[in-house]
Amino acid sequence: MAFTPLTKASLIIATCCLGFGQESYRHYKKCPRPVDQCLQTIVSSYMETAWDGLRVDGVSSSDPVRVVEIEPGSPCIAEGFKVDDILVELNGVPMQTWTNQDLIQAMKSLKVGTVVTYTVQRGDRTFHKQVKMASPPTDLVALWVGNHFIQHHYKKSDVGL
Ligand SMILES: [Zn+2]
Image 1 (tube, protein in one colour):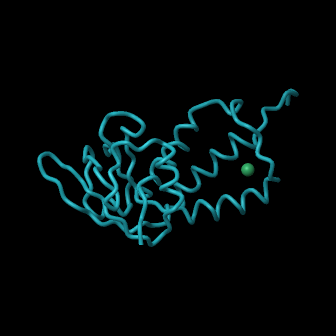
Image 2 (tube, rainbow, N blue to C red):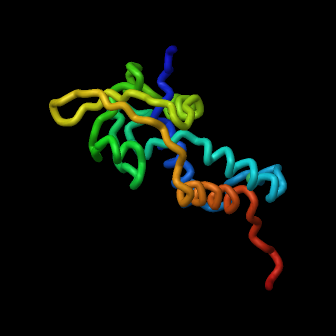
Image 3 (spheres, rainbow, N blue to C red):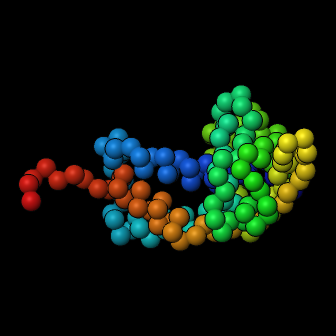
């Protein structure tokens, strides 16, 4: 079976969600779903997101894809990843030229329980690490869900209380 460059995108999605949280809700399109229906849908969707706990930079740039944060309790913490590790390949596919879109595609293709292999460069050493994708912790899911509702459902009241 051929895994495409799909793996470590999970982080990026998380990173994007967190990043968006910094911006004004006004920039976001209103979610078309009723709140209760949306809650059921997005919680189950986020809970099934494959998560390895890496956050990276260098995507969509000429810089190497570099680990900038590893979330506590994540598979990548357990596997001994370190900040500043360079991710060279995912399942043998070079990551250097990946765009954000590549990452998102990769992310979506992974499932909880899937084992992926990163080629990692640390200093002058290059080695492989296998990581089994996990479900994100509930506090992280809660953050993503909260961001969604603030950005896509919340409306600032225009009448005084
Ligand atoms: Zn919604």
